[in-house]
Length: 312
Image 1 (cartoon, helix red, strand yellow):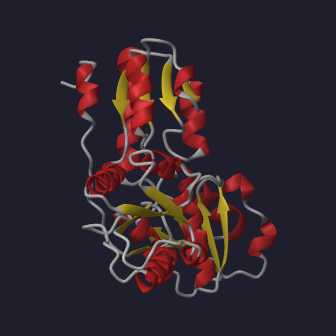
Image 2 (spheres, helix red, strand yellow):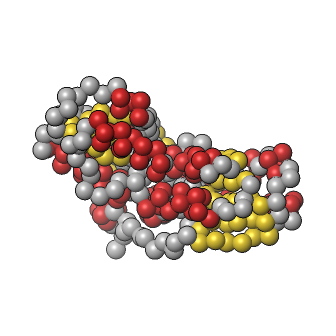
């Protein structure tokens, strides 16, 4: 069996930064450390941190008064930040800078009197945080059908932004529907879908070649990982999202001569390595790594860590 291994794959700069934030707080403050929502959407990352004394919470009220709280890579609303300050929490903001950029766009559009159309998945942590920047001025759409249901007048002062982890094709379709219905709608100053989401989707599209099967390492609640599976389906390939090699179903591989392996932006490389080892061991797999683009993006740790005097 031939194994095509995608590059780039796995951790992006935002995920690396967020994980390093929690590691740094654990190292210098010790357990318990509280994180508002999963730091990134990956079961193995979350389980590892929980085993080391991290508590993930879904409401800020679960964090004890005066304790340290880390905000996840997906960002939070101003209401959460205000509640944290009311509770005298020490805030460490691990929000991905590319998500912060979308927050800033929303605030800017709202100040100028726009109604903002947010293209994304309304229950995703990123969407909840972004919408919270201007809840009275923002409407969420997920599909072309949602766009058709919008009832703003043709001359309404509208702008749009997108979630950073969307499918490129789906986002293009929804943006197209918006622009057809509201030709005067204002786009964001720069594309909101992040470089890592784009690169991983394009790797599936352009590097898969002869592969009959695509295996994506990532968790079911990872938006960007699910979009990789969707891209593979759009390319006419069978594709499955698995947390690790233990979820590999031998029936998927019956008669398969070539498999394409990639990983979502929140999946650790060790999980890819374990999958590759199983494919080598059980199916005689031989690896060929194919590269779409070399990534060299890095994000600095947030200034809020310096307030803890843990980063010199």
